[in-house]
Figure (tube, rainbow, N blue to C red):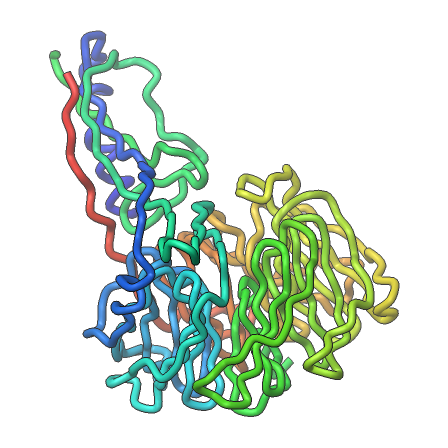
Amino acid sequence: MKPGRLLLILSALPFLAGGCTDRCEKTQIVRQIRPVTLSAAEVRSKVKIQAPADLEQPGKIYIKDQYLFINEIKKGIHIIDNSNPSNPRHVSFISIPGNGDMAVKDHILYADSYMDLVAIDISNPEQAHEAGRKQNAFTSGVFDGLGWSYDAGTGTISDQEMYFLEETFETNCEGVVPNPGYWWWGGIYAFYGTAYLSSSITGSSSSSYSGSTAQSAGAGTGGSMARFTLYDDYLYTVDQRKLQLFDVSSLTSPAFVKDIDLGWGVETIFPYRDKLFIGTSTGMHIFDNSTPSEPKHLSEFRHIRACDPVVVHEDVAYVTLRSGNVCGGSVNRLEVVDISNLANPQLVKAYEMQNPAGLSINYPTLFVCEGEYGLKGFDVSDKFAVDKNMLFHEKGMEAYDIISMDDNVMMIGKDGLYQYNASDPKNLRKLSHIPVRAPAVITEKKE
């Protein structure tokens, strides 16, 4: 049993034992949002190497050689030596204000820092340093549902900052039960997309692998939630409405090439061979990328409104749709799409899920993150009977995104990084867990 749950149960015992009909104290941790304004000069001065740090609010993951890169939302990137997946070693932390995505080519890490694209030399991960920068590459973005924007004229960034406030106040002792929609995050119950995160009551008398399969020499591997990817000598990024291309043939001097408007709701990008698959809140765009400097739109597969990361194997695309998030929508399912005719993708079958997010295919095993419901694996060799061929359901963690590489599976969630040996998918074997540290909480007592 997790500590937060134990606290909730124990603190309720006096109420249960005494049949309290008086007043109780209720403590709840509230997710608060406040606006912040930052200067471009201040942000640009803070990209630097630091000592290893604990995970607090992990986001995307990326693999390059023996190193694992974990985004700390809006703060930077953890570098982990993953030579031994059973004992991953923290190497360093790169402070990158406003960071949400990354990709690595050779010894250069590309990362967003609010409006800038930064090139960081990681040839020595313990002494990583900024090697180049494309200023004003981006104008806006969203992290965990919180948007930011940049005004190049004034050189200011308008952002939103999340913090946690613990409030204690008196209430009656009736009808106080845990919200079944809470997810676990570093010892704190949290409800995604709402303000209230936790409550406790004290009674009182008062194939070989699949992540992104970029055809780019020296590139690493990202997960299905990525907004950055590499192909040949080009870095591709997506924001809420467009695909952007940067020429990185000169590794430390990324140069803007062009952008392609895709409409609203763009979320993820997944390269497969010489194609790009771009997930949006209303469908999936397919681009021919055989000429990397000139991606050509082939088709769009449309679906009901929902978030939808995509992975691909051969002539099949796997798409998850989920509800309860900033994308809107109310469906939770896995869609299997026939892309043998790239100009006319067709739905093969849809399978109901609980709350699916990131996914990865190591054929014939498909790994699906189910949010607070954990991680599932399916044999998809029969695409018409995926639901009848579930291989495992690993519970007890918050699953957000995943990369499967050979027999090693790396899964990130709100409660940290998990690694498994999946040589026998029916008997998944846990190798390690890097937990998160609970965020600092401000205490406030109300009368």
